[in-house]
Length: 334
Image (tube, rainbow, N blue to C red; front, side):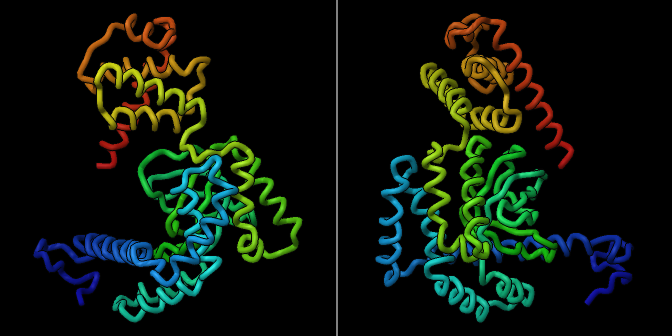
């Protein structure tokens, strides 16, 4: 084994600690993270087994009538699946972990699997967001968690979040990852989380016991208060719908452009009297950056969205500044 003060094996002439030690640590962590992802992915690919399918279907059938009036079947099945594994039939999960422990060679992975036996039911509020993690405070007991981000997309502060959490293997206090379903909710749905938390406090039960017995209550409250599984607020949805309608009418297809606009909506939360003003500003931004393959006059854009030419300028400028900031961040990261 190479000591930190030994000459680096790459023959650079530097000490190992000043040369390749950091690279070796990065490579080791990358392999560890890939192993974690493989363990989780294999579980959801292999389970529930055929003998357990009927019981899972019965759970979905019990939940569906109370949720499917607003939620898509796929979302109902996703949240019911975690309920099935971690509340109804937890032995499926723990037996899988025991099986994987016997196959695992890496000691750090074996130790991590021991901490995974009881995933933590989590609902809370996003407090900060960084490159790899966002912090969220639990609505149930006030614990602050650092949760691994699943994509580079922006996460607005104040959003509510739902997940089952596991230690992420870094050995840092309350640094976790979502087992599978990580769902964000706009602040307009905060009342549902407040009602669920109030019911917990009134129950006198432990967090673990209450959530095990009342998980469905959370989703019933969300549906009752208008949640339909949407990623955006109704206003943001209207902006995206108008934008896509314009693009479809003009034969324009560019998902990356739409993604830029969606990120802008989520991160900046622009306020406008008309959704069309933002959509129109986005179109002008898009053609300025050669993202549409076509050119339109400001007058044509404004008329297409039923607004004045001056109304779109603010959002064209905001989107331009937002995109420039994002590009600078990317350059700095590289």
